[in-house]
Image (cartoon, rainbow, N blue to C red):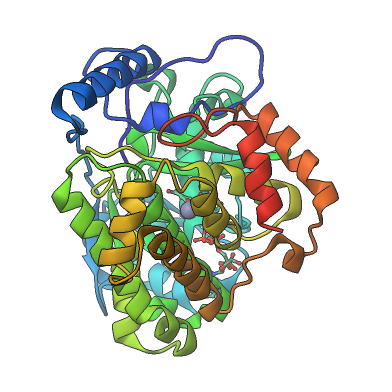
Length: 443
Ligand code: NZQ
Ligand code: ZN
């Protein structure tokens, strides 16, 4: 995940996220993101005129996370956590306890002072994480080990940022897709992760999504990269089917947010993105239906990590509108993150077919191998196959199937407005009216 230049939000506490497409673009060094973005768009438009097409964007790529992939890798954490460390093991609602994973970890880490902090809920809540930060301070913790899915890893990232922050920790929620400034955080405790759910990519990126009141807030910081992450596909064998399906869709969604925009002749990134999408299509149903199919789970785990570790997003425009609208569905109605993407993605692609036309055609041809019909039909079929794929995993793709009727749409749009989601997408012209239409056509 690319962390562009920090930019402080001014004024009283109203956490809002700025436009990610603006913030996630690759920025020239030393220039504030928003100003750079205006200049960037101007230059890009100029290039389009002069060259007849966009070219690959400048980018910084930085990712320090060590990946320990495969079976029997858990023991390796002993090497990567200092022998004298006071370690806080963080986990969620109990699945990692029940499976015996936490006990295994404690046996590996003998000799260290071990503490536990459980109860990090799905869509981790700010208030819970502050309690974790208190344990870090009180117990003089010097290493955090997150054992869980995206929620536990994200939550642990926030704990480390909040633990030694001097002011009101809600400040850390105010930066949206800009990173929290380094000088704001006095000290962070290093963290590692043992991944139990392949989906978010949090195990190898610098982002977290934190729930506060009726909103979900991205928090980015290079200080948040895990030092290492254990990716053992057998640890995912205990997942409920719906969580595996959510993970396949979240991964698919991460790729589409970075791939299905407009072409910039980024051939490597495009082919990596298409490779991940085709892998998910090949293994998705098996990964859901056969909990102990190692090959399917191994490919899912690595796809999920690669889809959101900054690599395929380097040098290309990025959308993220589906995620941002989806966060409102989770915050207001508690719908799982992956399910929100299954609901919104097909409608968003339909609504944005002109803006995304060239890439939609590429997606239809290269990912779904749709060749011999006219362009409109190609796009229609690609969107239909996307929806069918989500449904083949057992995930419903209409709001009404989650009990949400038309009368709730104004509420969602109001929340989106309150959180600053008024000019979304890679072209920043996805207005609240368009979001409303996307929601209406998702019914
Ligand atoms: O809490 P426990 O008891 O562990 O149960 C969890 C939870 O109920 C269960 N689970 C996880 N691993 C298991 C397991 N059950 C049995 N066996 C296992 N091996 O699964 C449930 C869901 O877990 P959660 O961590 O909430 O799911 P996920 O990994 O999908 O994470 C979702 C969160 O990540 C954020 C989402 O917004 C949401 O808050 N995201 C984080 C991103 C990032 N950091 O880059 C990007 C994403 O787009 C997303 O926004
Ligand atoms: Zn996601």
